[in-house]
Image (cartoon, rainbow, N blue to C red; front, top):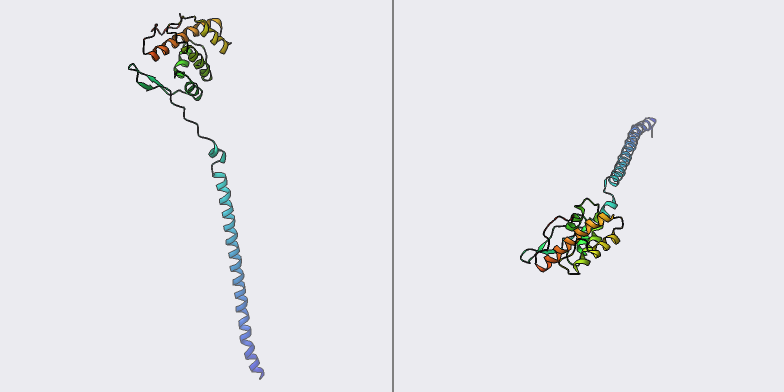
Length: 199
């Protein structure tokens, strides 16, 4: 092989090296871009997961039980003796007191009535008042005195903070309430239709 032939052969070899070098640079740039895209996507996915973790509702909120609906009042009889549903009590303690009544006493009405004299009773006191009401309806005495000793004793026992004057007023109030409940059960008229409990 002559020197010219060797030179001619080397010529194309020199031309191919820059192409390979350019291809290598191009492949390296593609790799860098690909790695950059993959890294960017990974950061985006991690950011999205973190954002969702902060935005999702708290598990404790989901696990919290829904407030129970207050049970409806026991049925009461209308003038014809047919059962009619009473008003739904305003709060769970009053609803529970009403549901536990042996005689279907309307705990909300009883609580409202004893409060009407300016004496403070809480919703939690409804259970004690219903218990006193039930005990005296069970006596089945349709005409009680305004100062009934049993009612007064039960009031003082359950509510020791009542003054003597307050106990006297509430005894009269509860006596009239019990008379109305006994009359309702027997479909009769209470002996005293007056709503004035001060006497």
